[in-house]
Image (tube, rainbow, N blue to C red; front, side, top):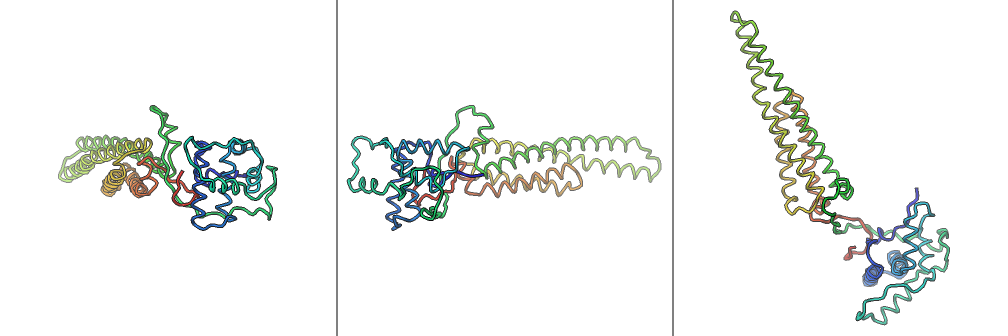
Length: 328
C-alpha cells in the first residue's frame, strides 16, 4: 500500500498551525540550514523550499491537504511535490502582521528560492533522474506538548492518544490487575478447602497412638496453609489496587511525581509478589501472583524510559528530520 509524502511529518510541523505560522517556521529552518553551510541543491534545503512554496501558500496548501487526505488518490511523490510547488497560484499567501518588518534581502531570497527547480505542472508526473529524491536526513527525537482532552473524556479517547510505550505499560498493569484479582479468588477457594481438611481431620478416627499422630499431622498440615492464605489475599489486593491506580494515572498523564513513584512502587510490590510466589510455589494462587510480580518488574523497567517520563510531563517524543533547534 502506498504512502503519501507527508511534509508535516517529515519536517516536524503541526498540521493545525496557520499558514502564516508554518511559513515563518520553514523560513527559520532555511535560515538555520544556510548558517550550517548546506548547498541550495542539498536535500534538506530543497525539501524545505518545496514546503515553503506549498505550505506557505494558502492555495497550494489547500490542494496539498486535499490530496494528502485522499487515500484513493495517486501517491504524492517527490516529483509531484516539486510540480505543485512550481504551480502558479493566486497570491493568497498570508502576510506578516502590521508593524512587522521584513528585510528586502530576506523577501528577495524567499521569492527567488521558494520555487524548487521544476517547471512541470502535472500532479501525476513520474519521478525521474532529473529530480532525484530528497536525500534522507538523519531522524532525531523532538518533544511536543500533548493536547489536553476535555473533562469527562471517554476511556477509549484516553487510550487512543497514548504513545507506544505508555500504552504497553498500561496494558501490562491491566494484566497485572486481572491476575491479582484471580489470585484473590483462588486464595479464597484454597482457604475454604483447607478448612474442610481440618474438619475432616477432626472427624477422622484417632483411636490408637498412630491414629492420633496421623490426625495431628493432618490438622497441622491444613492449618499452615490456612494461616498464610491471608498473606496471599493481602498481597493480591495490594497488587490489584496499585495496578488500577497507575493505569488511571497513565491514561490521564501529567503527574509531577509519577516519574519517581511509579518505578518505586511497582518494583517494591513486584518483590513482594515474587516472594509470595516462592513461599507458596505449590499453589495456584502463588503462581498467579508470581506472574503478576514479573509484569510489575517489566513495568518498572519501562517506566524509566524517556517516553514514559515525557508523557507524565505532558509531552510526547516524536521522530523527525527537522533541523536541530526547531520543534513543532
